[in-house]
Image (cartoon, rainbow, N blue to C red; front, side, top):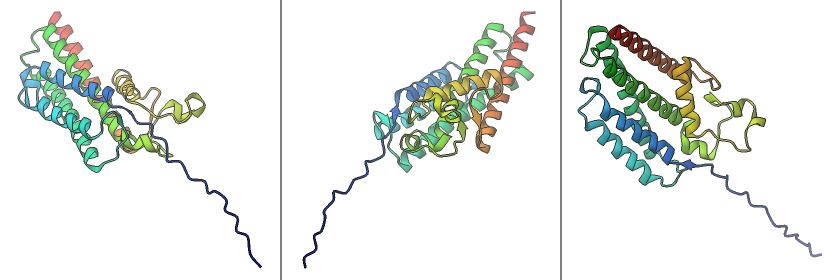
Length: 229
């Protein structure tokens, strides 16, 4: 007795959709941070004028060459390059802040003029916003390439669209503009606004940024008013 074998077509699982975002918003922020480094007075820079922009430019070119177009290639090398680049920007921003505070307390070449002080202070402040925005962007959920393929069930930074999924489109992912907005609001409100830090590192980094911003704005404005008076 012959058995009839039914050959039913097996369904093939489609590969997960990639939500990779464009590299250019992130690259533009890096270029802006490099330009701000060039505008800083010599005593507020961590290294000679050309060193950091050259190093950061080389790292940025390596990222663009290794993952052109949309950011969706998961690579240990590219991840290390991204963290090194963002770490250099953050370290430079913190160094400039420390030097600026030291000049404000003990007197420095830019503290005798209100216009020079406000220019130096605003340059350092904007630089910290860009550096911390890139830091959030790189550390949250494993970085942009990892977020393009899979979002973790418990994020380190909870955006409104994650807390209330009905507010966001299907498959919503945070983009660089979301992290830039986080960096700006944390620097102006000195506390979380719409993005909630859940992971310990997120709370620590946001606290450091808020304190740095408070120091810059408070001391620079107070010193500028004193000089004008």
